[in-house]
Length: 173
Ligand SMILES: [Zn+2]
Image (cartoon, rainbow, N blue to C red; front, side, top):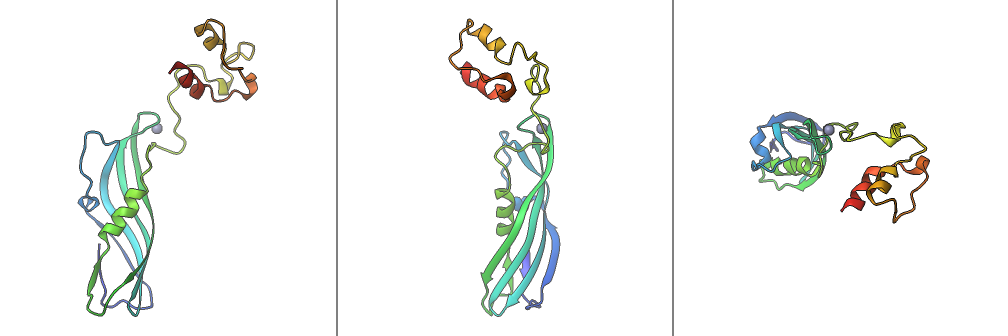
């Protein structure tokens, strides 16, 4: 995004548009969980006070890939708000904001992207949280069988044992 300085003043000027996907400078890798699937979009309000340029707005882009939680397809827009204050000399005619916009988008990418905020991992068995396990047996009954009926931990009462998946993983490692 190349911002022309001419015509800017204390009154805000709004720019809205997009740069091609290549502006994100994303090196394709077979290890990518997600990758850009659309242009870099932005909406920016710009003001110039003397030699100080203020830029406020938002940059975002569509990403596609694989959900880190359920393994299904992922297609989501990631981006963030932008607030910049840049010194511009009288000789400056334009400012390249591309790297600032790219950085805002890439920093907004989560380490483990999921397909939606309500995504849940695929169920591998009865879910104690939904009462599928008889309360009398408790969620630790199967583990006790695996470990010969002894347990190195005191199982919490069934009503309070709501994170059995995490603890199962720990015990198997
Ligand atoms: Zn998912």
